[in-house]
Image (cartoon, rainbow over all chains, first blue to last red):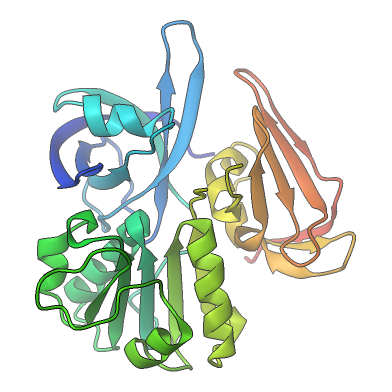
Length: 232
Length: 85
C-alpha cells in the first residue's frame, strides 16, 4: 500500500494564466520514474475529502518533487493548488503511483511524445530524464496548445531539440504552421514513424483522436501508451 | 458531462488493496474476453468511487467505492487478473 504522507511547499511558479508548478519537499520520498503521478487529498474542516491525481514533472531519487497543475473552473482541488497554496503550506499526498505510463532510460526504441494542454507534465519528466540519462535514442515531443501563453515549461521546452509546438487558437508572430487541432497530416509530418514508443497525454477527446490517428498511420496499438485526464 | 479518464487514475485507490501496481496488471473482461492492462480501462466518476469499463466492449469490469473509512471493490466483470513477477 502506498501510504499518505505530507509534503511541504518549497516554491511555486506561474506557468500559464491558469496554471502553475509547485515544488514540494516530501520526506521519505522513494524517488519516481518519469510519467508517474501522485494523488493529492484535501480535507475540509467538516471532514469532507477530495482526492485528485497530478502528474509529476520531475523524476529521479530526489525528495523534492515538482507538480504542475492547471486550474479547472469548477474544480474541487485545482483552484486551491493554483490560487491559494503558499510556500510553507503542507499538502497531503501519496505516491509515486502508476507503473504503466512511464519511460525507462534502458528502452532502446525511439520515443515520440504527444501532449495536449497540461498533458505535457508527465512528458516533460520524460524529456528531462532522457536528457539527464544521456540516452542516445531519439525522443521528440509534439505539444498542442491553444496559444503560446498556455504552454507549460515554455522557456525550457524552447531550448530542447525535437520539440514541435502546435497552436489551435492563436500562434506567436512568425509561426508558419496552420492553426488547428492535431491531424493525421500533422502527425505524419511532425512525429517519428513506426516502429517507435509513443506516449500520448491530454484531455480524453484529444487522446482518443490522436491514438486513433496513430493506428491509422501504422503504429501498433501495443506501442501507443495513453493517459487521459478527462475534460468536457 | 465530464469525460471518462483511464485506469492510470486507479493506481492510488487500488494500492490500498493490492501490493503490486495494478495499473500494469492484465484483466480479462468477463463479457467479451478482451485481455488488457488495467491502465487502458475506461474509468467513470461514480462518486464516492469509480465505475471501470472494458475499453473494448464497454461492459462494467469493476466498481470501486471509497468512503471515508471503507474501500469496496466489486469485481463483477473481471474473470481473471494477472500480475507479472
